[in-house]
Length: 409
Ligand code: BGC
Image (cartoon, rainbow, N blue to C red; front, side, top):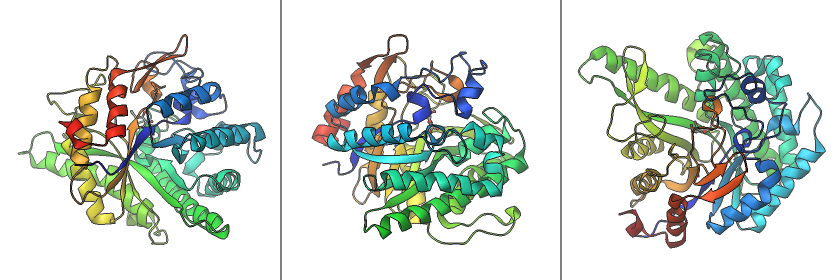
């Protein structure tokens, strides 16, 4: 059988670019808070090496690329837009397009400009307008060459780690604040969805696609027979998935958050980031003790990607983009099989999946884990910045070229 979906790779700006000191992750990581003591200042130096990286990506035959823009580079101070950064991203995007690689651009991927965070960030309703001003600038600058956008990456992970667990910036540790952020981020997503469509449609473009990407985990009760574990699993399912999906896709914020947002359909595709299965106990989320594990001890459960896809498709009925899927595997022992097993789950008669973006193209700065966790198809030596194509990338290259399910066996 032929694999019909487009296949490519994904990254995010803060994780690969290096060099920016105006974002919250730089401020957080430079104080030694990352597990391995590294920070995001050097990363993979992609900001300077983007041409070399795009050439490498093109040599792998990649068809589509999901990347993000660093808001704090484009707007380093409130209301001050940086022409150098805008020109840089335009050159980069044009180079992708010249190479035949279609970009999907994420507007917010975990990192905030420091000025925005210090004004209360997404916790304040009045700050929604700053996000929308940035979006307007992006569409003004690139709306003629980019038609596809992810507004916000994984609001659930951003809220959980930054606001509820206080593990990531801004280290808030306040659940109520987390719910406020959820509602304001949904406002940002809906506002951006409408704005991007309006601005591009006014210019006569009809191919606009906008959505967001949520982190989807396959949750199971730690002990299937324990009713409290089963209840807690449903609770996690609601908080981490349903509440966010309903709020962003349809404006249906839960009643405990106050007046609902305007209901509608604010998505042109369903964006799924999928990595793992987790076991839910007494209000705790734990590593699932399965047979196969990544370097970060994440359970590998390929079936989950199909079960989650089918579930979301049934509910929201739009084509599905797997906006992220990948494995932390320094020695490249698991990656080829991981790719095969997950893609196999997505290719069947009537599958709604039209895109697959493997995470990640390059080894990158893995947020609080720092540089040690390696998700790349391409190995990066951070000291020398030398790139080495891993064996699994050679396999992925062949898969993209041949698009045959025989290679998945
Ligand atoms: C994030 C990426 C991250 C990846 C692996 C996703 O949650 O969007 O930024 O690197 O997972 O942890």
